[in-house]
Length: 148
Length: 147
Image (tube, rainbow over all chains, first blue to last red):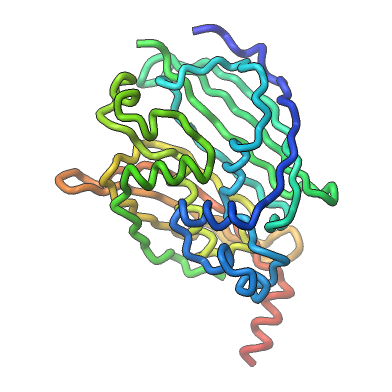
């Protein structure tokens, strides 16, 4: 396993994506969330939103938009597990917003656990809306298990 | 303010189609979640659900319990895989109540997801938490409307 600790601080190319009405609906369906605010703009407005709000883990949809940078981590997908994530909600995100995402590698740790050697990689993402307001911070951890 | 213990919610049984639908919605096409041949070559008995699918289902549950506009923080740590046929059992309880930054009430909760399947003991698959804030103003207004 190659040591990837030198990658801490690596910044990915920022990108911008629109929060789409249909994508909010599709995502809420996929996570089996039946709250009407995710499908009915009227219900969303009655609940005090400007438009359909983004579900709590909607940040996942950025996989569709992220710039395909050179693969600095070179993860082996057979050995990759999701470790965890932390979302910090700073302000509202609704359909029609345009978000810019800035991501960087925040931490790389080589560890030995019950399943042998593993690498923990923490990535931080800041989401900034069209009014230059940071609306969401996400910290996510992936684990790559060592080769058997 | 949320009830001290969240009402249990059961979701499932989850199918391969649920995993594929999540892959499309979220955009994570790691074949380990939809390609049986690939998953077996990696040493797993079958495909398994995205961690973020379980997290997404739990996020909706937490938001409906705590009030989605009150939620300030949501965390998940994955501790086990979700297999096709598993039913998720979601739970939550208040761990701590204190004063928030603007004089309101800040509530910290613990969240769990267990996976159940026929013929198997329920397994913990995700441990999570959330922080929700209830402004003093809103509480005063709510109290006023009850008077």
